[in-house]
Amino acid sequence: MTDQNETERVESTQPLITHLLELRDRLLRSIIFVAVVFLALIYFANDIYNFVASPLLAVMPKGATMIATSIVTPFFTPLKLTAVVAVFISVPYLLYQAWAFIAPALYKKEKRLIYPLLFSSTILFYLGVAFAYYVLFPVVFAFLTTTSPQGVSIATDISSYLDFVLTIFLAFGVCFEVPVAIILLVWAGITTPNDLRQKRPYIIVGAFFVGMLLTPPDAISQTLLAVPMWLLFEIGVVVSSLYQAKDEEENTQEKATTPVEKTPKS
Image (cartoon, rainbow, N blue to C red; front, side, top):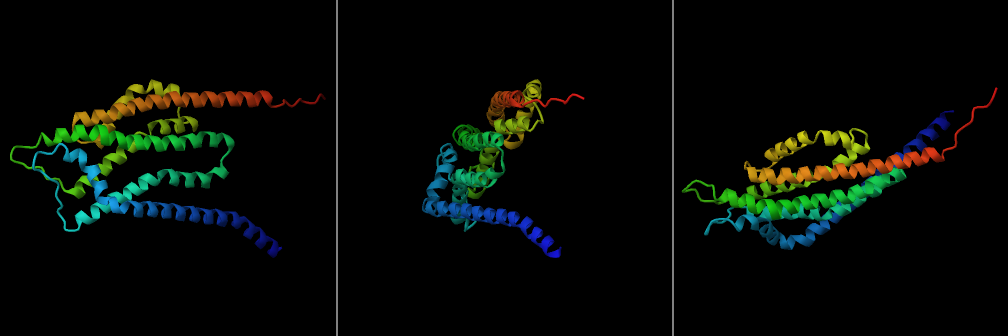
């Protein structure tokens, strides 16, 4: 009896060990992939930093330059940015590894939802970063560099600038995931598209509040984040309605094809 219980215990732990081993392998693959991308980009570290800093350098007063307040900052700051860029480029591969790990445990209906969400969430994050770089930064930096008091020269530290830029990139990338969040909330049954439409005024106010928290303290940058968030909210509501309608249609077809058990006559 003891041997049988021990055998059952070993058999029950084997699936867990198998999953842990697979998770370890996929994490190692992800780390190696990011490291390879980083090593491939490290030669261009200074060029990458110059590209990220170009929106500020383009609007700085004539003769003004960026500075480094630490002796090691000119070396480590471009490397830090390159590491972030390596992760940024590796996102599709990292998501693929995550998808390959969880896909066997998903039902067909769940796969139909998750797969396009993984793809769309990646694209939306990239769009958020691109929007911040090409739309927000030129406007905000042009405004901030013209509002400095007289006699104050602009000399931004390269490390502080990188921290600011990465924060804005992350904020816009996450905020552009609004449609994905709405679809997941509707799919989980937490809310419905009709409820979201009724709460539209509160959503708009919330978008401007988030813009106030995540962007520099000026109305232009707040609006540049709030308006896209509101538009993405509307897109999310429309797409979630399509998902909900398709799910209801599938449930109706399943009920129609399920045979009804007849109660035997007494």
